[in-house]
Image (cartoon, rainbow, N blue to C red; front, side):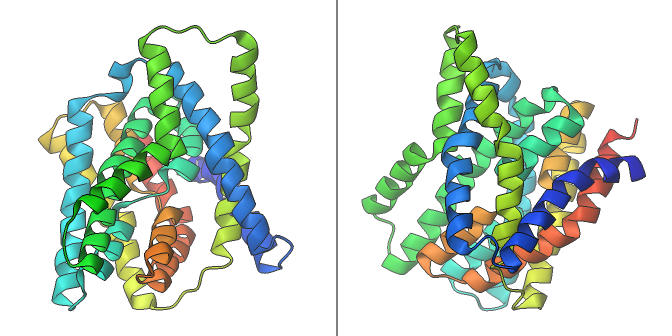
Length: 309
């Protein structure tokens, strides 16, 4: 277990350095915003495109993996939603909390970290999970929040969802990469090297950006943040594990990748959505901050468990 912790430590150390830079204002909010844009639109997109272009569609599309991840994620989403309604939350706030309970930082943290720790064979399952999060659950939160604010589900909502998917650089990069792979399009060596260099900036850039953005987050509503952190770091990987191992008989390695990725802390884009729609940004912020801090230990424990022969 110590060996796994030492492998994850460099990743969280970069996050800590970013956090320190943000807290001391050496890296202010504008600098963090533009670094995040660089990673999101350029570095991470280059990494995802390069990975996808070198994958077979069968390495991403596995119905058992998708079923196991969807089942576990939907189950925890439902638990968080039921608890939210019992507490008297409105639909929009409940949607934000449920999103915090199941959407992990797969793009900025999981893809670079788990690929290095678990091996390149993890790329396919991780990208499948990223696709499910972006297409299914990111669409769901827009529908729920916008529908509750408008008082109805209209065609405008689905146009918003569609445009959001088309404009998301991670989805575009993944789609273009899979098209190149599917049609056996040759990527010239200079282009591949360019993508490797640009994509190489994704890991340190994304981790530093996570830390710097956490410096602006507050730890208000700690009880709620604690509940959402428990959902994300404990319940989510537990139910994904149950689905992968007992319900859908996913092979050991792929199940381990699913469980490890499900154990990641709350994704920063949940806060961006909460802030955009002006729905409970403080509780999303607190959940991200608390879950990221605790995940230094819990992620190492989960990875150590799934790697145990």
